Image (tube, rainbow, N blue to C red):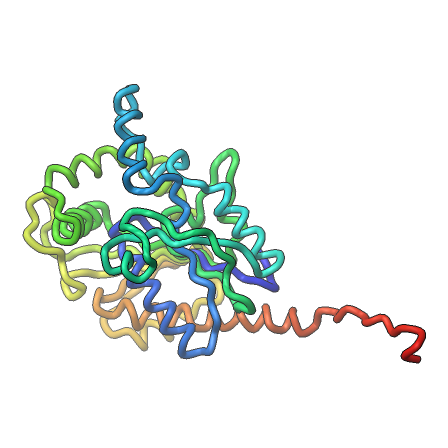
Length: 306
């Protein structure tokens, strides 16, 4: 963790809703005049799309049918941790962009499924914002969780996550339900070993729970809407959280445990604004105050200028 150069990390698996959470953070940053360096987790995949297919096939032929982006081997997480460390110490670092589709290909001038070149982060940012799969991962050789000042988990219940994954990949990528099912099965061991444990490292978890039947996610015709869902918000350390204020501001919300509040799904953006804005402002103000109090380097005066 760094007082001078704070890091906010949002962690959730593909289709969990981290992109909409990023949009909420972007609204807060814009409204409060905060300059953020945005980091995408898929920028730290080890392989581009074509190479990943080749590596997966090779792994399958050697008996490993569970090789996936969820695991460390398919990512350069040591470089991601180096970025977190570098930014925390100096406010600098390098990242790149993974090109997802034709629209981004036209924007960046490279083919879908490839990476842009590595480039430095913008100058003079107030904080680093990471959104991806591994923002709070801890292994025998890695500890990204210790570098982040605020860690957010976004994790719908598993059947809802599968429904979102199936619909997104079918509608936007043209995959069959069977192909997406194979992907889910391939990722499951890494999901259990490397994704789930991160949600014990996070400071706040937002978990969407459908209130409609999702018992067979593989035949669901549509994704449950926000109004057909509740969101469980869990605070690792509830000290300092003004629960009476949140309950008064969010209609139909209630506390389910001493560290958890349940809200209607349609009120997620409001809840995030209410909960996260003061936390972000506190982190940024602490950073700015620390930077103002830093001793400035002394300028030597030459003999002739005396």
